[in-house]
Amino acid sequence: MFVKVCGLRTPDTVDAAVEAGADAVGFVFAPGSVRLIAPAAAAALVARVPDGVETVGVFRGQPIDEVLRLARAAGVGTIQLHGDEPAEHFARAAAAGLRTIRAISAARYTASGHAGDERLLIDATVPGSGATFDPAELPVPPTVDWLLAGGLRPDNVAALIAAFGPSGVDVSSGVESSPGVKDPALIRSFVAAARP
Ligand SMILES: O=C(O)c1ccccc1N[C@@H]1O[C@H](COP(=O)(O)O)[C@@H](O)[C@H]1O
Image (tube, rainbow, N blue to C red; front, side, top):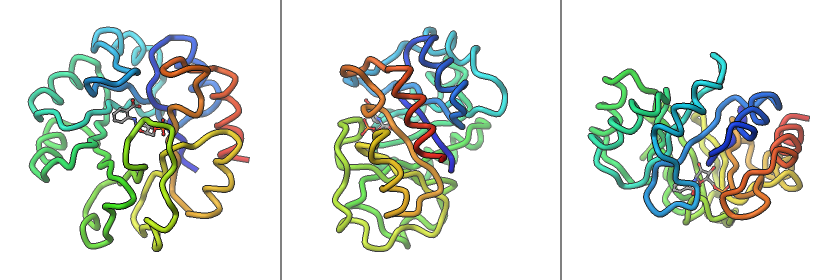
């Protein structure tokens, strides 16, 4: 089970995610997020991440030139786009040597609409809110590689994996002691619960 821990902003929590065995760590560059991090600060955290652990920049509705500039400054290897971005944005990212994750709400998922995506993340309507989505919004889970996100926590992730059968999971609020403040112990508990 691929495990991503997102919205990291401090060295101790990046280290906790890596040591716990996370496959990916995420840094949020979407304006207005409580987890927003400056690219230079993110670059210092990316430098702590060993090869083999994916570094993901998270964006929402931003111009692709801004996305690429921030991704380059932070040194992340993957971008995650939450704003219904056009195919051209993904092509520009791939041309820049970046991997991509398309993030959509469960209510907007259609199999035909996402067959060609490299990787898909299916979230609740408001990303980063700590809310889960209604299972009725995803009657038939994707057959492509996909990440389950939205309100995941150490105490619910195993049941949600069993219910939806994703390729991976992605968490932010559920491993925080307060909005935007990651808790190393909760990070460790989440990774252990996601990969028993
Ligand atoms: O985390 C944020 O603040 C954020 C802001 C804008 C776009 C995406 C964001 N986070 C993504 O949402 C998922 C789910 O969050 P949560 O676990 O429900 O809090 C998170 O993993 C990020 O990929």
